[in-house]
Amino acid sequence: MKRIQNFINGRFVDGTGDLFENRFPATGEVQSLVSAAGEQDVDAAVSAAKRALRGPWARLSVQERIALLRKVADGINARFDEFLRAEIMDTGKPVSIASHIDIPRGAANFNVFADQIASVATEAFEMATPDGAGALNYAIRMPRGVIGVVCPWNLPLLLMTWKVAPALACGNTVVVKPSEETPATATLLGEVMNEAGIPEGVYNVVHGFGGGSTGEFLSSHPDVDAITFTGETTTGEAIMAAASRGVRPVSLELGGKNPGIVFDDADIDITIEGLGRSCFANTGQVCLGTERLYVQRGIFDQVAEKLAARARTYAYGDPFDQKTTMGPLISEEHRRKVLSYYEKAKAGGAEILAGGGVPSIQGYEGGSWVEPTVWTGLPEDSPVVRDEIFGPCTHITPFDDEEEAIQLANNSPYGLATSIWTTNLSRGHRVAGQIDAGITWVNCWFLRDLRTAFGGSKRSGIGREGGVHSLEFYTELRNVCVKL
Ligand code: NAD
Ligand code: 6OD
Image 1 (cartoon, rainbow, N blue to C red):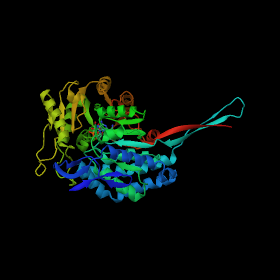
Image 2 (image 1 turned 180 degrees about the horizontal axis):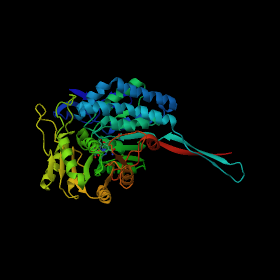
Image 3 (image 1 turned 90 degrees about the vertical axis):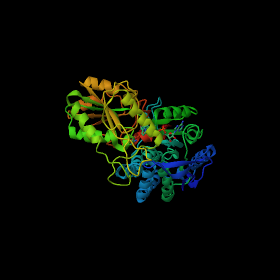
Image 4 (image 1 turned 120 degrees about the vertical axis):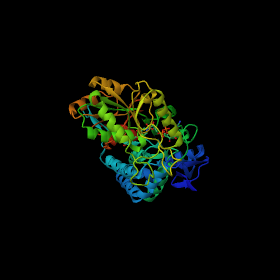
């Protein structure tokens, strides 16, 4: 059986931890064994990353680093089909999604941050001094050092490179801990790094689990200078606690329970198309997805009916078949969690407008499938409306006016993303300014310009990444004051 190894100091090596199984979510079959990194392997990876900070990598000019980043992007594209297959086998996501989103974005991240680092400036201040000669202050931008990158499973290559690319652009070195569910593409990227000529120790990958395992060994390692994390809010709290030892910076991109707001002047076709994606894309396993939907009363029935109809259109089956539009959830464990909310909705008296169960798919009985689901009728304090479920499901509630919509949308401990659907752009702009969320889309969803600030409010995270904001996190500004 295929074995997935750690990538430390430019070499593929077994870890001292146990082997663990990696399953194909569409069938539940074990497809590979992964060699977990123990504490000493994590230490070896961090030491390699630390050494690399003083090696050839540190002596490269920004232009040389940019050239290497572009080679990595080209290397991913040159092996596009291998990355595609690896991502689909790990996640079960349909080829139609992975080939349009995950793999191209994985490559694009390296080009985007190569562009960013080429044009970033720092600040300078002239100051007066009593002798009249003055002084000049200017900032220099230094890499932070070894960055620990802890990743989730929902968009594995996309979200990992979203952090690795700017970290490398800024001259850092990285130790990546991919999710235990999705070890393959981070490992394959090690081959591309070697082919591109990235010096050994600059990019390292350690496999394993979270608390009490590889993730914790990495986040609590004293030679990790900063930690960037995407995942659940409670894990973010553990990472932040670990980072507090040694006063290390963290960037946390965490969970959400994102609202969508549909006003009665919305273009219904555009709205249903957008909501179909925001509620069900990637089997609802997108942190930005819409699990709470608020619809103005006059068009409530129309929107509810059309979204439910949309939920019934998805085609399940072989993820490698272009006709498949809905994949399985990531794992049986995650399916148990999602189905527990399907049960809570039923028990709470929800009206089930679509789905609510498990589809039967010939040949894929062992996979972790669920039906896209639309509910209405639950109170706002139901766990179905409060908790992040991370499945292909949404609950719809009517509202009467703008003020009520804003109040309902903000009634959540999370604040990651919102979508507002209206043809009145003044209203879209006005409401966007009153929603507690890091990201608001008006008449669209997941439309990404990678230069924009990305991150959450409230319990959805700390800090912003994207464009120059990533460069802020992955560098430290140091001021130089020259007396003239
Ligand atoms: P998770 O928090 O369970 O795991 C994420 C990573 O953290 C994994 O690699 C895991 O092994 C590791 N980990 C777990 N416990 C750890 C610990 N104590 N110390 C160190 N590492 C630890 O998240 P997940 O289930 O992989 O991903 C789904 C979650 O991610 C959802 O909540 C989703 O909203 C969130 N997410 C957020 C964003 C965002 O940009 N805000 C993007 C994608 C996913
Ligand atoms: O598009 C991105 O850059 C990004 N960070 C997306 C996050 C998606 C969450 O599941």
